[in-house]
Length: 276
Image (cartoon, rainbow, N blue to C red; front, top):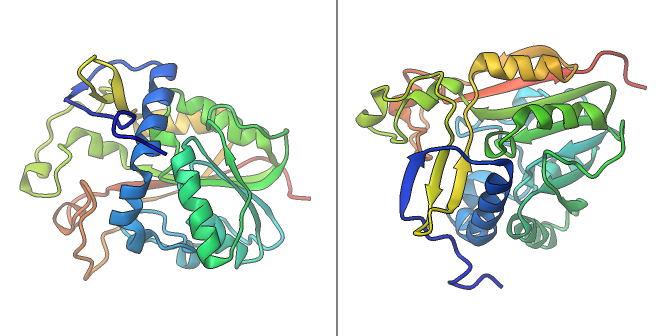
């Protein structure tokens, strides 16, 4: 059980370097400690067997970005409590879900017990997936893994490695231009303060200067180059608009900001070849 001494205690925020090791250690500890609180706050939005791509509430049920999943072996990377994978079970898919955080996977096991929808859960770093080459037909992550790793290009290569020819890789993440603006859903969030091209990580740190939470930024061009270098073809980029009538706020996402510029980008990628 997580004790008070185990919990991260950030005392400051900075834009500073963070290595692969520091990033993994900080983010694993952060999500282990706060998985319960996160689901208490956002559980109604996330659902227990629902597939929502982003705070704009674009659902896979409507968007169908993964294509036809019936009978497909599907890998969810950075699954959190694996609510997306549980939804996929109802669509006839055969998912496996991974996450860096044991705390998040514990939430997933509890949710599986309540819903009676069970998905294999694997604790794994997205940069080092513990699966054989060509194991899956589809891979995806909905705001998991990609912003929270130091080497997102390696995540793209890992996704390509575990997919079969013709496989699809879809991931959503914070829209690159949001990096310029403060993390504020109100009027202060409309003033650009950071250079778009500044890739220095966002780091929260404790009294010993140790990172307790890390996010990494990539530009749109960076993302495209990572995707193509991994061997994928970029099929589409979806920038969901803020839906009319949605009044909820989630961190930097709000009706005010959403009416002016996008908060999410979703990249739809495919490997060359035909599915068996």
